[in-house]
Amino acid sequence: MATEMNPGTQSSLAHAQDSAAQLPELIQELCAAEPERTARVYPRLVELAWADGRLSGATLPVVPLLVGALESAQPLTVARAALLLGVLAEAPAEHPLAREVREAVRRGVPLALAAARRNMSSRRARLALLFLLAHFPEDRERVLGELEPGGFGPDDFSRLERCLHTADFSAPGRVELIGRGWPSPAFWRVTEEEAAADQQWRRGLGLSAEQLEVYWKEETTAVLALLGAQAEHAIEEGQE
Image (cartoon, rainbow, N blue to C red; front, side, top):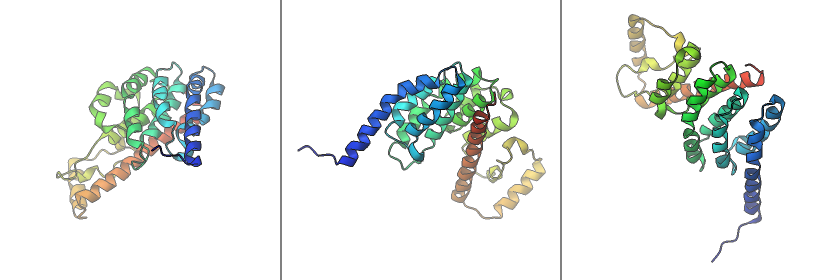
């Protein structure tokens, strides 16, 4: 026997379908050469794909279109697409679409790497692409192997490395990795003696591997947030 949808569900599905139907046109506008056109359409695209800070019925259809926009010749388009893709990739895991959305975004890693190499002269594109790529530690070797650190600056590139690093706190000598995220991992250059003293002090705290893992993940989130905020600021301030 067929199950009837309640009016609210029908309305939500209809809205999602209407939203998805707008996406190709919005992406075309996003890729336009005129900055004022992209500035006008980008908030609408965000509203559809990330409705009130949540994944929506239009999110999955928009991801491959945003990934395709990474091939644009316009650094501003690349920056905006990469920033939104990074935001979508970090949707709360409890959302039923989160895993599928993240995997869809991850399939764009090759294009993101190509875009990063192509847009080294654009600060906003560089930062947004670093933010996007920093979400995928499972692709660490490929990402770090294909990018030249010198073009990004030591601070920003060290933030990428930090987010891509997966620490095993069940192994001895790993506690020194905690607390090195600010102002950037590149800032921290300690001698062997300082590192040994630091490890001894940290071990004295008696933190379990599970507790250290929690601190590590929270610190990673903070570093990611800084990368995203830098990218958004560069876009909004019109930095090249």
